[in-house]
Image 1 (cartoon, helix red, strand yellow):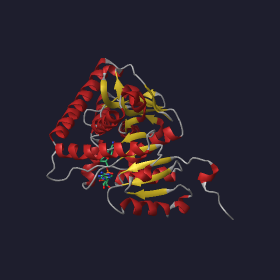
Image 2 (cartoon, rainbow, N blue to C red):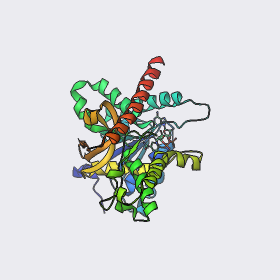
Image 3 (cartoon, rainbow, N blue to C red):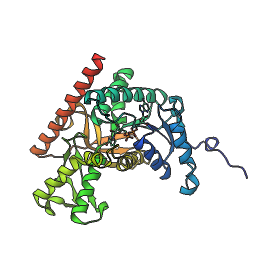
Image 4 (tube, helix red, strand yellow):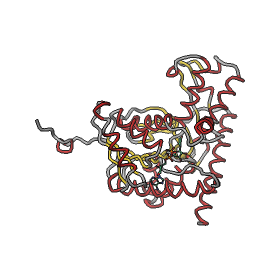
Length: 333
Ligand code: TXD
């Protein structure tokens, strides 16, 4: 029996590149393939690492009953014609390293990854995952925008985004469900703002089957869950000690990949480039967006209260401070 290769049938198998074959990247590659969403190219600077992981994942295909290709590489040429590129490459903070060092190192890695990825897949959708998330997404966008010029700006605006709000909302959702003892999927939670201590969980927009949690819990309980959400990443780092969270982050990035590959038109909080929405301009920050095959198809403007809007602006101010710091550091080096 002969089989017909997909390429000769004219069928385009979707392709997702994951840059960075670390904890988040390799788990994401596994989820994308096992959900049968796309072929996956896993790229890393470390020779052999992505190749080994891709082969390991290929050997699980029969057991997991899917036929997606997994390709490990150190060469961006192998990422050509990707529909989506997810950047998870970056260093975690090591003893003796300052925050400046981390911004500087990760900025260099993310900018290089974004520019290389776009060079081989000019129409790709780009999702940045590397921390500090909102700053890294801005720097990736800026590097691509300065290469392609203003004519591409509107297109790039829809195609470049950061992943954080889906994860932060999933954490808030989990803590609400645990507190109330209800089925997690019945809870819908919304967190906007930056991926940091100043993130803005929105209890008014968080519900259990449509019932706002403000009707189900007292103020102090909600405040406790909001605080736990704000420090959700740190709580896991403190427990693991040698690294951070990666299962829920990979699931969150996979949800965004799925929404766009399958053109699901899902409303998800995403770090998007704002041009006046919420009174904010020239910044990437988490806001609810409609995600479909074109990328960010709409930025939704919620009717926030004065206090909620003030919290979002405060969060944006901290992102802007870090962007300026990152630009200053790269200017000096
Ligand atoms: O919500 C979110 N956005 C996040 C972000 C949630 C969880 C993790 N978050 C951040 O993702 C985290 O703070 C890191 O900045 C990234 C990746 O986290 P991960 O836990 O996967 O880090 P690892 O395991 O250290 O993996 C990083 C990989 C590693 O294999 C390096 O060799 C590779 O990145 N790396 C590179 N790949 C390609 N190109 C370059 N230049 C490069 N440099 C390092």
